[in-house]
Image (cartoon, rainbow, N blue to C red; front, side, top):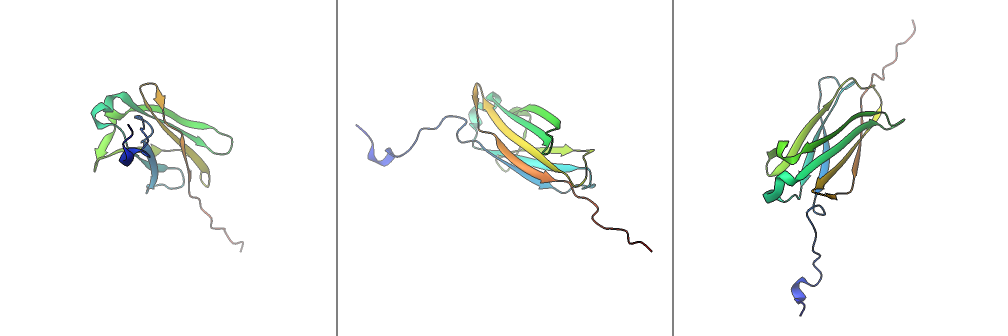
Length: 130
């Protein structure tokens, strides 16, 4: 017998509910630095130690990889019931687009990859010839 109230409800596993977000944070030197707060929602709070965040930070053009890391959820701070990891990337090229790819794993299950793009600032002023 099927319960009509829950007939359309899908049963999702421990990674299908995961949501990543990446927000740029102000930095001291916006020409060569990017700071990004990664926020994670939808994980099973009673099994936090089974989750890992994976990120890859690279230059969009050419694909040069600056950082490729795996971080246990246990090492990520909880702020307002949301996992929040602050990332800082330094010594970057100015006026350049960078790519941040985020995914999570729960035991042997993997979330989809969420991709975000960020730009370093640059000096766009020109010197006038006298």
